[in-house]
Amino acid sequence: MAFSSQEKFKRFDKKIWLSSPTMHGEEIGFIEEAYRTNWMSTIGANINEAEKSISEIIGRKYAVALASGTSALHLAILVSGIKPGDKVFCSDVTFAATANPIIYVGAEPVFIDCEHETWNMDPKALEKAFRLYPDTKYVMLAHLYGTPSKMDEILKVCKDNGAILIEDAAESFGATYKGRQTGTFGDVSAISFNGNKIITGSSGGMFLTDSKETADLVRKLSTQARDNAPWYQHTMVGYNYRMSNVIAGVVRGQIPHLNEHIAQKRAIYNRYKEGFKDLPVQMNPFEECAIPNYWLSCMLIDRGAMCRQSRTDTVAEFVAEKGRSCPTEILKVLEAFNVEGRPIWKPMHLQPIYADCKFVSASEADNGSDIFARGLCLPSDNKMTPEQQDVIIDMIKHCFD
Image 1 (cartoon, rainbow, N blue to C red):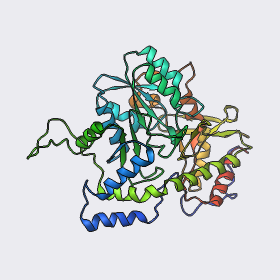
Image 2: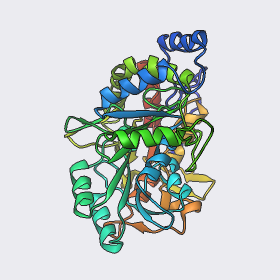
Image 3: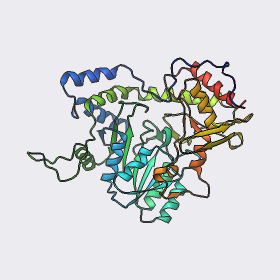
Image 4: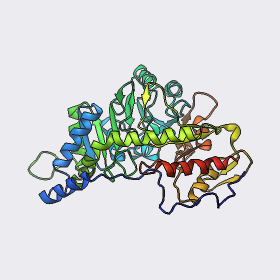
């Protein structure tokens, strides 16, 4: 039935966020150091130390600090040699920032459906895409909500087809696949320090590679591609993409708390899983060989437990049914009580801007559209208390009454 009792639950006075920054104190010390030493631009100890620490944690030889994860992906595309007109096989269920840089360079994204075991790019669909478009030599893979993709299978398909893999690990910093950190699988990779990520700089990102030549080129491109000359000379187009030493101070202060944040997010995921054990839902899944960073906890409603739901490009509605619910109802209930949830990323092939792009699924099924229709992102803020989460769990249970 519809959520009918406004008396059963009290609206939270302070908003419960999906995933907001968690500061610890060390960050302000590094910011003050940048201020005190006057290194307020794109050079300084904070940048150097953040790059060194991220490189060591992830296990790549070089990390280049940039203004955002999106700028890291853009430069990853450029240094991979992608040109106007090239096709790039791209994760379909992801944030638009994964796909947009492909358009920046005039290339053509071909969206690859996800699978249900991790909600990430389906290796079988990727294999099919190479059969359909055998001249394609680039893959843009995202690890959704901090869950590693099926990397053994993805890497085999890429190797069999001589393809370069660009790894969008923006959401998965700290996650591992068979003991190996995400961000180490791509020929080049990127992570993000956006305000909602597992650790944050308020903004910022890192480009990752094992090639000194590639890292040096990215550093040059990110600082307007100035040549080594006595004057301002440029032989290629550059970008203003370097991370500020101030932002790097925030990142530097956050890095020691990565494992702490992951542990908090894991506890949130497990509380939801236990709380929903009697509901017709499942949590976002992962393989036994993988350890997510649990950035966002998500749920998927069983098909038989879905009430009627309709969505246009801008409006979502539902029809209440006893014993059933849907993402639209649950999200409206959460919002009414000052709690932030969100729909699953709307698949790229359903986005108006990408409506004319090709989409490849392993079968007639459209897994991404199914997950989008039945799934939602739950409040996963690591400052949410267990007591607050228990109330949220009860709210969602009440939607199925």
